[in-house]
Structure formats: structure tokens, C-alpha cells
Amino acid sequence: MNKIKTLLEDEAMAFDKRISERDKNGFIPDLQNAVSCEYFYKSFWREPKYINLYLGNILKIIFELFETHASKHLNILDVGCGHGLMSLELARKGYNVDAFDISKKNIELANRTLNNSRKDEKFGSLTYKVKAFQDIDIKKKYDIVFFCGSLHHMQDLSASIRQAHSLLTPNGILYCHEPIHKNFTLADASQVALIRTLLSQTGYWYEDSLTHFDKKSLTEFQEYTTHIHTEYVLERDIDEIDGQSPSDLETDGEEILNTISQYFTKLEYQPSASFIYRVLGGLRGDSNTIHDIANFLATYDKFMTKQGFLNPNYFHYIGKKY
Image (cartoon, rainbow, N blue to C red; front, top):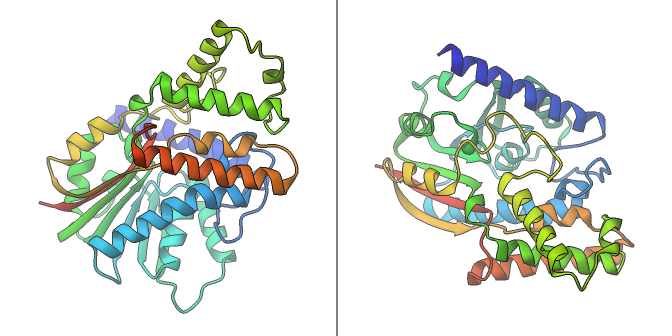
């Protein structure tokens, strides 16, 4: 237990540090009030346009899944809500949301963003609290337990799924949007290498070093492709020593899905994006041109993953409690 407590404390410290730096550089975690933030050099968080192309599409699918498989006026538990953007959008859709995270700084920013946001008559309810998942009172039951990029941080995946199961109403639903990085291949990475290299040659990519790329060298292209593959599988740049946090990528897609299947009946599975979340923010140039490129890349990513020509890096899953 002391080991788990120490890991949680280290995890919270990592996320506190990460969000404090973003907050200091002007980051606003609000889909409706997002601003351009040059602190991000490659991430979709760099511009509101890119946030909408990536997270906006994820939310669209989430709402469609809820409308298909769940009733209205739902009570939702958002586990590991981070800075609260997804919780806020759920509440704007009319849901009643309890959102928890172990990072105090994330919850502070989430509450500040909530207080500064406009709420219309459709707004449900939303509360943010600093609390670990295993410490949530199981006496209160929810219609949906919601994991968006948090389940893969859990030290004990099976215990976390059992906890989610116990927190749900008899017909309750588990939703998750989680990574499946291990399915991302060198062939997938080569597509990203091609896109980035071509963008660089036309001046629309942030890495000037790619303009000096030897286009005749198979070795150089292979090395670059391998670097990109590592970047996506580990979800960090090749020169980054540490990941997002000590427990980042504790589990991956196949293990998550296999564990969930022991407690939930699958209602629907959908692939999510393959590569755009680490490409959109790297676009540079006049806004009209790079926004047109961004629109095309988002369409291309969606088409290729839907057809099975590219492997997704994330997936949507929704299942019903046994």
C-alpha cells in the first residue's frame, strides 16, 4: 500500500509540474475558449483549430456512442479528468459530472476554467475534486464511468476495472478512450515520415533539419521512420528521457480490452486517430494554407484508419456492466 501511495504521489507531482508549466504559458483547457499557444511546438494544443479537429472529433464520437447506448440525463464519473476539458464538454451537453484527479494543480485550473466559462440552460452539473480513484466512495452509483487517457496510467488495471464495475448502476456503462500504441507499425510510421518530410520541403513543417534530409538515402529515411515509430509507441520525442509521468503507458490497448471483457459486455469499439495529434501542431506558414492542410490531414487520418490502411493509436470502447 505504501508503494502504491508513493507512486500516486510521484504521479501527481509529475502532472502538477506539467500543467503548471502549460498554465504559465497561456494554456486554456476549454474547447469553446481555447487560444493559440506557441508553447506547444507539435501538439494539437497549439491552435484552437487543431484542438477542434482532434478533440472535437473525439467528443463527437463520444456523444454519438452515448446517444446510441445510454439514456439521457446521465450521471457520469470522469476518472483522471486532468485539466477538465472533457468533463466541461460533458456538462455542457447536459450530463451531471463528478470529475476526479490526483493532481491538485490540474483541479485548480479546471475549477478556474469552469468559473470563467459561460453556462446556458442546457448545462448539467460539474464538480472537480482531488482524489485517487480507489478512494472514491462506492456508495454513490453512476450511469457511466468515463476514462479518457487515464486508464493506461493505472498501476493495477484489474482492480481499477473492478472499482469501475462497483461504482456503476446495474445497467451501467464503461467508456474509455485509451492508447493502443503497440499496434502502431513501422509501415504506419513511414506514412508520418513521408508527410513531415514533404511538408518540410515546402516550408510548412517546424523542423528545419528535415530540409537537409538526403532524399536519396534509404538509411536516413529508415532511421527517421524508426525515430517516429518510437515517438508514437512511447508517446514522447526521441530525445525525451522521461514520459508524461512515472506510470504513463503502464498498460496498453490489448491488455486494457482483455481486462475489461472480464467485467463488461462490449457494445461498440471504434478506432480513433492514427497520427494527427502529433502532426497538426507542427504545421507552420500562413494560416489559410496550413488550416487547409490540417483539414486534409484530419480527413486522411480518419479515412485511412476507418479503412484499416493505418493502425489507430487510440480507440473508443463502450461496454455494459455484466
